[in-house]
Length: 305
Ligand SMILES: C[S@@+](CC[C@H](N)C(=O)[O-])C[C@H]1O[C@@H](n2cnc3c(N)ncnc32)[C@H](O)[C@@H]1O
Image 1 (spheres, rainbow, N blue to C red):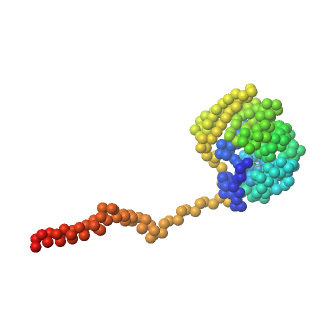
Image 2 (cartoon, rainbow, N blue to C red):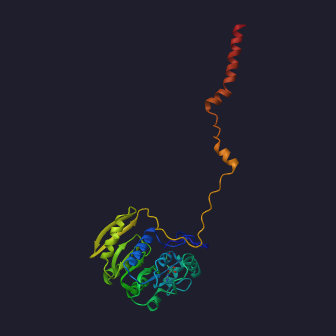
Image 3 (spheres, rainbow, N blue to C red):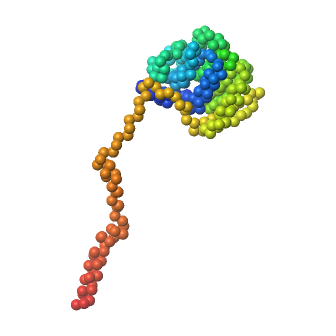
């Protein structure tokens, strides 16, 4: 995990919140969540691993009346084992629950339900068959991701969508093993893959895949390919210079100050064209011609006398 830029300031827009949430995934989250709302699918939202709140802030924006949003993170607390502790110390040392809450409340009036502790707690704290969307982005070590996928299986509604972060990043082989193992042995069915995340369901992925393909084929900023593997249709997507989708500004957003007008003196000297440097020919004429002319005049006078 590379380091995200951390600041102490209130964010003015989502782009100001440190984290790992590429434009393509912001677009896909938005699409899946809006699609569920359009289809009348009701259910809670869950995120495991919030860091400074970048993806949680976007998720919270899609919460409908009567739905609950739960997040879980270790924050400054101890990890359940040494490997997870080392992972957290290396990648998330600057994280505090206070920073997450400050960022989240910059965009929303109410915090989600926060579970402070390891993601293994969610199974007992979140009801089975209650969620329509789950983002798994906590520890990236195999044992933890295996457990998080198991919990998601119990908590997700049959038509719900689960997203696995870093399922193929070079530095997170444990997530890759857990993700593909779930596809091959635990009934998980991929809907699509982005560069960073796998979007999947334990329901039927085909209707969503069809709608997703129709939407993506209209865009010129997404690279798209479809492959079959082990009986699964894999829709691969990648950004071609995609910009993040529009997102409401935070309550702390400040219009950038207009660029100061140039001072009058600077303005007039800027308007006046610079004096050109003397050319080589002009320098020649100025320095060499007078002596030559003088010498020629003297020679002419001497001839005459
Ligand atoms: C990659 S970051 C999350 C990024 C965030 N979703 C975003 O979009 O910016 C991973 C987070 O998982 C948390 N974490 C690590 N191990 C965990 C565990 N066992 N249980 C819960 N959270 C954990 C870390 O504290 C960190 O905040």
